[in-house]
Amino acid sequence: MKRNISKELPKLAFAQGPLSTIKTGALVVGVFSNGDDLSQEVQRLDTALKGKIKRLIASGDFKGKLKETLTIYPEGGMADAGPERIILAGLGKREDFNPDTIRGVSAAAAKAAKSIGVKKIALPFDLASGCKIEGADHARVSGEVFIGAALGIYDYTAIKGKKKLLKIIKDDHGEEEKKRIDEITVVNYRPGGANGSEIEEGATAGMIISDSIYLARDLINAPPNLMTPRLLARTAKEVAFRYQLICDVFKLDDIKKMKMGAFLSVARGAKEPPALITIEYVPKEKGAKNVALVGKGITFDSGGLSLKTANGMSNMKTDMSGAAVVLTTVMAAARLKLKTGVVGILPATENMPGSNATKPGDVVTAMDETTIEILNTDAEGRLILADAITYAKKYEPTAVIDIATLTGAAIVALGRKVAALYSTDDELLERLKAASASTGEKLWPMPLYKHYEEQLKSDIADIKNVGGKEAGCITAATFLKHFADNDHPWAHIDIAGTARAEKEYDWVTKGGTGFGVMLLLRFLKMMGEE
Image 1 (cartoon, rainbow, N blue to C red):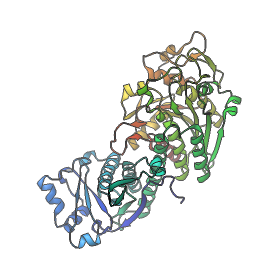
Image 2: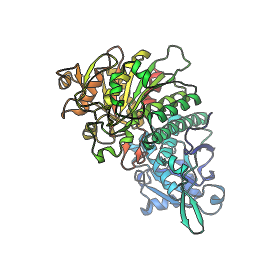
Image 3: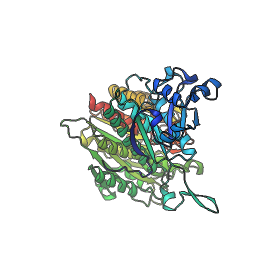
Image 4: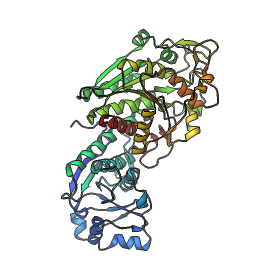
């Protein structure tokens, strides 16, 4: 297997045997609230600890509340032959236990270990030591264990590494390396009963998914003077070379020849040239379904001549999150050898107020010959997506899905932990909802009633790019729907709220989240299994 894209992702390792014998810096042990029904394996560990876990529970020092952690230290022979530390991790109520719990608790435990300078941690493959999860096998849960731990300790260090800022000055005697976890071991504590190959397969898949999300987060978090359309294109080429994917980068003259007038209208004000990037994974199976993923790639959004405020502009490097998610989803699909083919289409440009910038009131012609009256140049994402959705049809996909940080209205409607979902096809909608429920990346279906089209009617063109203050996220989706067609089921996911976190929670760290990678990979896997 080729090495990971991210140098920061902890190494995946495997171990077998009783928990008390696992040699590691910190062993994570899951405990339900109030010590409810400790598993046999945890009871064996507690016996080796001379009853320390049960005493902590009985005293109330550890209650097992969801994501609560407590670090204890073994003594005697166990300290020499087994883990240096044991981190008790609260699983909450047994009846509420699910894959989201696994990710969240794994993340909390990994953060606790990282905070005290632990380099290597180990977690049981199911975390809850024998607690069954409906619809989840050993492979699935072992993957979630790794994903939660790895994503919870992510740091954006690309620039710091280059500038030698990974060192923290401790005192006059020298320097201390920044705290980080180098290795995550997934433990099969019952090799005679559990399927070892299944556990390793699942954890390896979890590592691949985590690596993809690390790359997505790195791309999103990169400063906009570095993360330009050219760098995004170069990254796509590097990914394609590494994993034998098909990649094309269309430059300004190519985009002009394609008559992508909507896309070009956004790029006009920027000195940086735009790029239309495609990256494709073709599975070995003949007749496989093929999904087109379209990701918004505004590498910096000033608003154009409809200029944003200073505060509104400060995090607009995040506006290429959709493109980052699509690129890394295609990468992971290839590494996981999914049975569904997928092509990623990334229209990438800056939106700047240069001397040649599009003016409010201009009319442009999209690739499908729709004329668009542009009344707000800060509603630019839908313009580049319009041409990209049209271009996606050339692949004759089973479905077209676009994902974009499209509207502030979606944040007003759903907050920062739920993305808005729209679709012209009920079956596609239900599949995406199922993938959402399975991965913890939450979607909420929104309407596309025909009367919303009235808000987009133009007096001088076929359509205008904004529909007023009312139902802003819905009219944006309605605009995109105009460029989809009934022959190709289409869905739009508005990740304006979920693409960036202002503070960490669960397995999500502050900054770019990579929201959508797990969701789309689960969707593609489900498609291939039908």
